[in-house]
Amino acid sequence: EIYLKGFEIAVKEGGAYSIMTTYGSLNGLWTAGNYDLNTTILRREWGFDGIVMTDWWAKINDEGIQGTRENTTAMVRAQNDLYMVCGSPAENSNKDNTMKGLADGIITRGELQRNAANIIKVLMRSAVMERVSRGEEEESEEMEPGDAPEILMANYRMEKLDEVDLSQMDTTRGKATLIGVHTNVRGEYKLTLEIKASGGELAQVPVSIYVNNVLLSTVTIQGTGEWQKVEKLCQVIKENNYIKFYFGQSGMKFGKMTFKPLEAIK
Image (cartoon, rainbow, N blue to C red):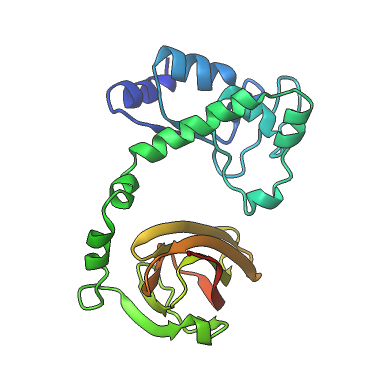
């Protein structure tokens, strides 16, 4: 009667399509794993058709069990779609129990697919889809060096250079830097970056990476001060290309960058 009403108005009248569950518990059950809140009320009664994410490093539990960050099976069942945050999902850096829960039959593949579908539907409704759906010609025009407001740091011919030193790049909040990449090899490339961030273990420092004005990924790392290696795959079909880094927050430091072809287009 008190706390749900504001969310109901946001969903039914405001058209909200992303919601964050609280960090704390409600009557001993952490909200990220509360089926009644995330599915019965939010989706069935209110008709919510978006994504639900946890608060940062929230705890999750089953009824009568102590809450932990690792119990993501309870989150999956409740239809809380996304856990925030995980430094390396491929390595399961949070050591969550999703895959074990799937193997033990605690959660089903269908439940995981349901969560994934909720995430994908929100991505398809987002403004970024308008940008990625534009033609290559329009994107090329926008990335003409004379028109771009970003700073062009340098141009490189990658087949003659194994790595690039980005330690002098300005990573101040709101800054954007372009790296020109010229290559005769068209196909799939692997971009490898050495990065670190300051500000403490709880700090989250993002950088958005674009290739030829198309968002490749937004990488967010914790401010531990330790060097991390980030690898991303992309397609290159031009000879003259740009890699752009946009910094939404200060505190990041770059080391070496490599950009190497994996498979050429025949």
